[in-house]
Amino acid sequence: MIELMQIKDFLQQIAESIALAIEIDTQVFDRYCNRVAGTVFQPLPPIGGVIRDVLKTGQPRISASPGADPACQFCPKQGHCEEFGFIHYPIIYDDQVVGVMGLICFDERQASKLHDQSHRLSSFIERMCEITQIKLKENDIAQKEKEMLQDVQLQNQILNQTISQISDGYIFVDRNGFIRNYNHQAFRILGVTEKAIKAQNIFSLIPDPALHNLFNQHLNTVYERVYIHNKEYGVFVSFFYDNEEYIGCTLNFKTIDSFGIRIETGSSSRSGKTITLKDYLGECKEIRLAKQMAQKATQQPVNVLITGEEGTGKGTLARAIHGSSNRSDKPFVLINCKAISPESIDEELFGGSETVSGEQLSGSVLGKLEIAHSGTVCLNNIDQLPVYSQFKLLSCIKNRYFIKRGSNRKVYIDCLFIAASSTPLEDLVKQDRFNTELYYSLNGIPISLPPLRQRGDDIMICANHMLKLYAPYFSHKDLKFDKKVILYFMRYTWPGNLHEMDNCIQYMLSIKTGRGQIMTADLLPANIKEVFSDQAMTHKIEKKLTSGNTLSMRDIENQTINDLLNQYGNTTEGKKKVAQKLGISLATLYRRMKEK
Image 1 (spheres, rainbow, N blue to C red):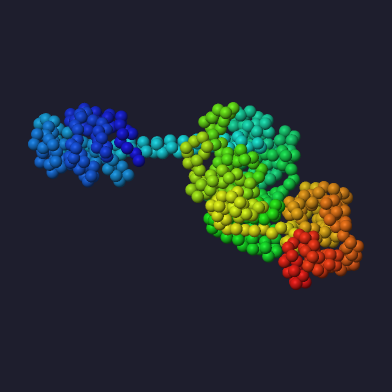
Image 2 (image 1 turned 30 degrees about the vertical axis):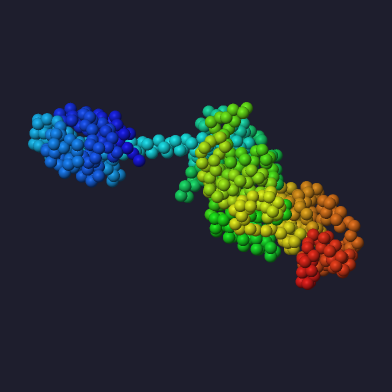
């Protein structure tokens, strides 16, 4: 709150000017009865007094006989007061009394002037109080502008420090195409100096028509290839709006060779479309249930725990939850706890002070949780998080803040936490390898993803999606799998799940020659072909495939079960071998046999 002490010098000038003009001493007190300015020092009584009464009531007081004023009855100078009269007016700001300005007479000449000109002097002091109000307002505005400027400078500093840590070229462009923020990698890519990058327009630095086309479309998070100094780069452009008005964008440059062609199944498309639960592939019962649970996570501020084997799509589901929630336009930060060394996991999550050769600097390294503020953070392989970091993460989730290493500042965050694990966390809790309370904090909405081998017709839904997704990168289109590949895909146990299928299809595309549109079994990786090479049923498969009969996925699955039962026997031991061969439980095999 603004205080009179903040304009002390101004008030002293006012007091001296008043005393010089009307030859009556002046004093100014703040709301705490502290003397701020004046031409005479007149201490206040310890209790009571006119000044305190004006501060309390907000009403002006005028008197030519001070001792008779009711406010003077508790004054220790009652009966021998040195004052001959006074005028005291409240100074009001934002509907609150913040101080008192007054005239004090110390002789009969001043008292006579006060008596004869009380109306004029009262109006004069009242105007001086109004001028003081205006000065307080100016000072308040200046202080708020200073604080806003400091906030902007701090945010700009954080922004510059953040983008300076990005290995790719990164720049921020305003609505007119001029560069406002950038990192040093952008200098190298654009081939300009720091002075030049501030002065030039982005379209003069990158004249490629593809970039102009991106800006004309104004599609959020768009990927395109552009040429800069005869070298090809992938550029991601994200546009920003204020009440639907375009205000600027970010450009993130990646070299094509480092960008690669690997795209996670179900992730954002090249058009920049955000993945939602509607885009998450799968129609089997288990996936439908997982989507229902995930939908609840988009509507409630509850943490999510996704479990399932490696490669079952846990990270993609986390992105879909984020994309379907009201945080979809906020950051999504994926942290792979398995890929970060135990020594650096704490700084990766929570950040800290910058150090060079062991010497601490004034800068600050942003942690992933701070970057994810207001958005979603996905902690993949949470089971690999060291125990000492589990306690700090638990505190952060419970309190919604953490204290950054190297400082005492609290960093407040608002994040949806999605944890993913291939290892059942409840088993780790029993082994004292995972914090019990953290487990229950993360397990707000539990979601279990089935392995690919148990997803029935979803196997070919995923395979066809990947084929369509990757084919353009290998200059192919309108491809499809032949019946033998479908049969192998449906019978294979996919121990690596979607990740293995992803690699398999990319391998098939990379070795495919010719312009044919059929993906044949000879393109399959050796490890998949070897699984079926020793089976006595191979000739039966060929016979069924060449018979001309159209087989559904369920027919193929049932026929596979029958062939394996014939091979291993219909005994309990034989059924165990069949279930093991199919990668399913014995109970699931019995259910499938019953459904035939």
